[in-house]
Image 1 (cartoon, helix red, strand yellow):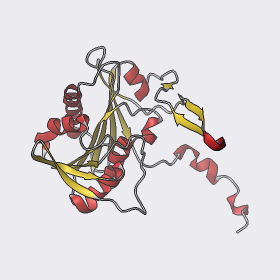
Image 2 (tube, rainbow, N blue to C red; image 1 turned 180 degrees about the horizontal axis):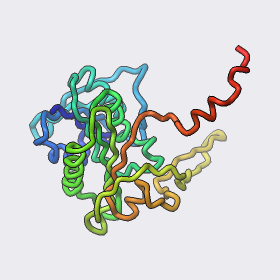
Image 3 (tube, rainbow, N blue to C red; image 1 turned 30 degrees about the vertical axis):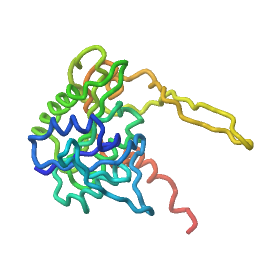
Length: 256
């Protein structure tokens, strides 16, 4: 099995290195990841600027290829130029921070895995929620591997995309694994505002945000209850519930 490892925290991020060690025996592993952190890059790609790719070593041994682009760029380049197809499995993470609820749409970690699914691979995005203490990525990686083994032995097929989120480690290991839907409730967030020169005003999104009361059957709720959250995703954004309602509208009367 040919496996692509990537992330949005940068090619030297500890979560990526831990995931590499945890997945090393699964097959032929290739690492292609951004030069620098790309958190909240979403599914953006580089269109008009040139990108460079460079092979790097870690501790004197070949490690992977760093790309001065977005996470989705890394996966697209890996498939088309740097590794070549077929790539059977794309693993993205382990992200420094959870990617649940609406943040799934902003996440470069999820976007990298989604690009792999678009290109026909099996794809899993792994994220670790942050607490008060430093993350033990080796423990995170062991849990990610255990969940991955279940997915690979089960329903994970070509083009499938799954998001896996691990709860904070402050209070001990997770209490279990739960399969839930993505939460779609709003989050409470704010901007820091500062007056600048020449009448300008500066706005910066603050680090602190909170989810509304978590529903028990969602990824946000699972983390709140200290479960590992497993959420199947897909890249089809069609709201199928509204198709018939829109088809019933009088679009035939639109002047053309």
